[in-house]
Image (tube, rainbow, N blue to C red; front, top):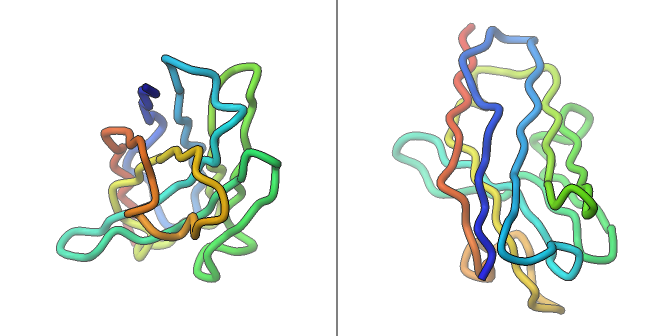
Length: 124
């Protein structure tokens, strides 16, 4: 079992930056691929970015050049650095973990563990 706890969300203005953290416990995350999703009010949960167990990184087109995902296995923590925030980035941000291989990390149904989410609100 892996427990995930997100932090770092808040209310910011357009153009500001935030860094989200996802602290894991229960197991070390080195064998897990870790992913950030977000869900805006009334919409589906969307892929944001992931870093695989091997260190390969993916970002959704909508956040490329603005968001950066990273992980620190020694600290058992996943990060999401968000720069140039826009009102359309407003959502609850979730981290997820899976130790499955050869699957699409962009699919929420492939994730095994989820955090409770952290709210990010960007005002214009």
